[in-house]
Length: 391
Image 1 (cartoon, rainbow, N blue to C red):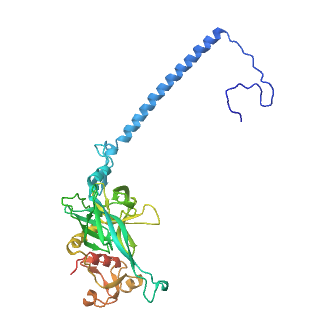
Image 2 (image 1 turned 90 degrees about the vertical axis):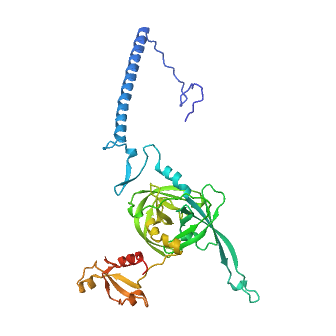
Image 3 (image 1 turned 30 degrees about the horizontal axis):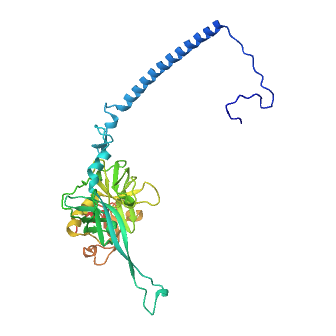
């Protein structure tokens, strides 16, 4: 390969001299005619280019108008998302604002960072550490924890996850814009639903975030998560509800109705709100899958609302129980009893001294209804009993 270096070569690659071609001198008339022809070609090319630009611009405007306005004559970018026939929020508002930005500005200050401190004891039981028959003394160390929460009342009630504050000897709540955190008191907690209610005293009315209706959620609906993942204060992530009613067992707790979202949730997001585009809390971020991306889970806010008053007033949730183990009817049993397979649930065991035993229920009985509601399987019994009130 040869590289241009500013000189004129005098030999070819094979070493032979370069033979200069004889220059042919054209008459002046031919040169003038050639120049005139070139000018005409250039003018024609320029005119063609301008015509093409006009045509393309016209088509572009046509496509833009067609895209901007839908068949109903409304601007597509201002058309509203629908949830059960009711408008929820616009992707881009009529004033050009992003609703996500708007809700973060409005409700972001009600999201708090929760810092915990726990004392963890450890001891060595190995015989190596025994000295004159005395065991090695126990040691303790401080463990720092981090989570999120959100304010639900002006006087300082805060909702979060139970696992965020579980075992903590000191709980601090940090408000947006405040350098010094406030000491929080645990008002109520429930390990089964992974819920906790805290109380802080700021000395002034605090911003709150409204609670929505998680039963009206649709799969595919946009949601926003706000929290403090890895200590990154007030991080906002956006996604959709990717599934509803997920039954999961998380660290021994059995959840039957979790919301699944692909909004990014990480350690530190726990206890933070999952909001719809109206800025309403529709879930509390609780867990994230370690086996895949975009698999976060939240406790539906309607589940929380059922026990919230009890948590605040009594500090715990008192759950009704029947004291039976039930199963779905098998095809053989249903045929023997001349019943439909999806009709009722069979009692397979009764707990001693339970309400069921006191009521006279026996093993093998078929429960057909509970509180005047038809039973179609074992899951119905579990659900209806858990929703019933004590007594």
